[in-house]
Structure formats: structure tokens, C-alpha cells
Image (cartoon, rainbow, N blue to C red; front, side, top):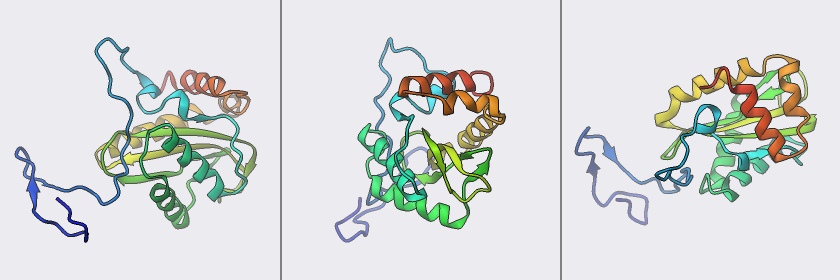
Length: 195
């Protein structure tokens, strides 16, 4: 249990694995609604994202504006609690090395977030911005990755890069005129490689 000065009043351990349990000062967890009995089972990309996390027309014109816009959307939709801390972490990550991979795509991400599940937001910049790659970046796959989901993240990243490796496969994402169009393009484009 943490006290107001950031120290610990007592140390707690998991009764099963003996790991030390603690509550972070600023929780950065995903608050997605729990699955209820009778709800359809999510498959493929739907396990990691949702239609409300699709932004078909990003307004930002800089790296910082794009990442903040996507992070604020995740907070507004209830997927993360503390946008300011996540945004700062994403900017620190981009300062180390750009997550732009070419082919107009970037994979900004924050790893080591406590709690919740792997969360993906997709944003499209129609004009494209300088994101540190060799060409202007138009597609942003922003991921929040809890420590426990690192293996899932690598599989998801591989599936996304393979699914959208050609200009023809990226075209439906870039031409999306609504959130629904972008969601449909993402789910269709990843159906084969992300299960």
C-alpha cells in the first residue's frame, strides 16, 4: 500500500507466486468494459482495439500533436486513465528512435504500462507528417502495452506490418472517409494474419 509520500506502508506479496504487489502512483490502465455472458467472442484484431479507437482524419500536423490527439481519444473512450503521463512516455520513446518504419507507417508505443490489456489505436493523417522516417507518415498504429502483453505486442506488430506491406493493402485505410470505414478496412486487412 502506498502512502501519500510515495513510500510503502506495508509490502504485499501474491499468495500464489510471491511477487511483490504494488499500486503505481498514477495508474495507466485500460478500462475497457468486461466481457459479459452472451457477448460475442472477439477474434483477430478485435481483441486489441475497437471502432471508437479509429481516427480516420487526424488534425495534428506534428509528431507531438498526432500522438496527443490519439492519446486523448483513448482517454475519452475510457481505455486509459492518464493521458498526460502516457503522452510524455510516448514522446520520450520517440526521442530515442523514431517508430516510423517507412511505407507511410509508424508504430508509436508505450511499453511496461501496469494493468489492463494491449490496446491499439489507428489514426490516419491525410497529408502525412514528418515522423522521423524517410517519407511522410500517414498511418499511425499507436499501442499501449502492459508488461504482461509483450509477447502479444510482437505478434501484433508483425501481423500489422505484413498485412499492410503493400501500397494496395494500405489504400483502403488511407481512403477511409469515416470511423466505420477505417474499422472495416482494418479488420478486413488483418483477417488473414492476425487471428
